[in-house]
Length: 247
Image (tube, rainbow, N blue to C red; front, side, top):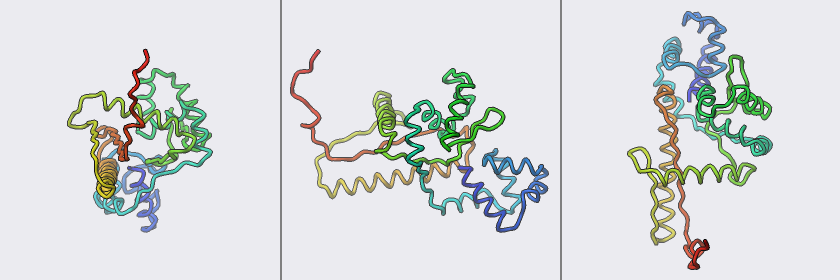
């Protein structure tokens, strides 16, 4: 993500003892503009290239360096998860903002008054997850990816979300970009362990490739994809009944 690149750029500035004012002068911009860009950790790809060039770097240099840094998911506190669980609309807004959806897009899609959206934003701010800013903007103060505890306060909300995702994927036609894959086979524990290891590798690869795309591609070239991986012994007799179903 661009946020990670800005953290690296801050390190470069510090290592070279270069101030925001000096960088602003090199780019023919004002110091407040540079401070705003670094504070919001967001700018157009062309501007990012200009910043890199001013520092004698290329975007590829930054991406390569970023790829050497282990990305650990952000974990919310028990209190933050509990407060989100108490306010589903605020939790859903948090997920939408994490996904990169703009306030304008949220307003248009849900037909919500902007006042209602920003009231939810204030809730997120009180929880410590966002900052409501001038100009009708809400900036998250935590970085993606965020990892929620499966048995935490948001457990039921996450179950509902994942079941809805699986159902919609199951019911949709397979395409070159999406598919529902399922298979049941009798095998040994060793084979199952091997397959699970391969599936984890796919998960890691997706995370790595997605990170590269987010660092190098414009936002309008990206779309959210979700993968659900499950491998577990199945006991059909615990899931299936031979009794006739009631009306």
